[in-house]
Length: 170
Image 1: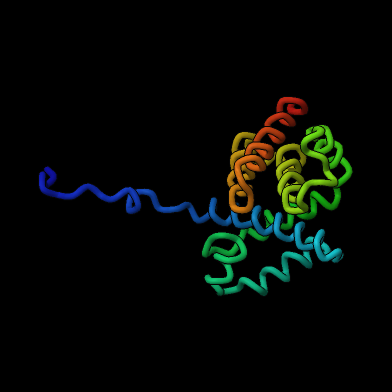
Image 2: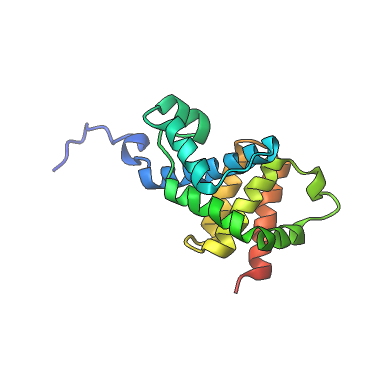
């Protein structure tokens, strides 16, 4: 029988963060940031080169991990490379779907390269990787967008990815 005066565990003590999920979220963040960096700098790096560079930068450095990927975990490098490699190989297909979501208010040439990178990664995972349920992918990229943008962009990402699922999902 338990002691009636015993304090219940705090919510933080009950819900320990899932390390695997944090590493996946970090991988998505790293993939988006890699695409953004390449777009801004005009550099050409293979997905493997991007992963290796990040791996060297983050190895054992919790502060750098928090700064670069939003958590004190190294990303799931396999997922990061899968996303980057998929975007490199399926870029034309991804762009067709991305362009199908755009409107007069949201034109590609007026969009931030960071917002484009978020959408490209989300579209790849939704339609070409298919390892994760659509709702989770949409939630993950909507959450990721909140790190960088205000409500208008967050809502746009959510709406665009949701529209694509309705339009293209079988």
